Length: 252
Image (cartoon, rainbow, N blue to C red; front, side, top):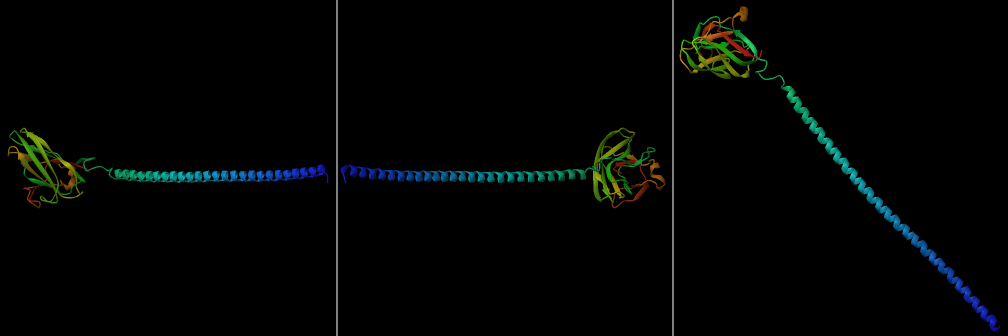
């Protein structure tokens, strides 16, 4: 073989070898690029997945918190409304008023003349014609001018029975016939019960009397339901006369 042919052969082999080496390098680079893309894709997927998970978790937590808060608020609101209803109900239950409201004259025996009896005589109402006691009016007469203080006690059933109320009054008696009002702290009285009245003098001349002759026209055929007694010894002392001049106010 000539030198020229041998050189051409060697050159061909070298060229072929280099061509094969270049193809393998391209293949490796392609695999590397493909792997890189896969890795990038995997990283992106992981990142996206993590972000989505965190976002969902936070969203769920916030939603639960808001729901619980709304529920508590509604529960408190319902409870407050219930309390207010109870208060209104209590107010309505007591709307009938106390013993002093809508009071009117329930016994009306005004005086007919100046005939009197000693202030310490007691009297009682046999059947109280109302459900509360507010005031009692008597008419006093004296021959001496003076300042007087009187006190009246009202009791149930007897002169030493359950105390209904006490009223004190101050008045200047000028020698004529003067109305004297005993204003009680309004008190409930069982309708139809017996109520006694006892008067004591705390200040003033000893000569005062109260009028005992009244106009009993309003009592009808049954006569007055007020009885005067000699004194105030329990239970009901001794009967002195039927009726005195008296007016009583209360809730009928």
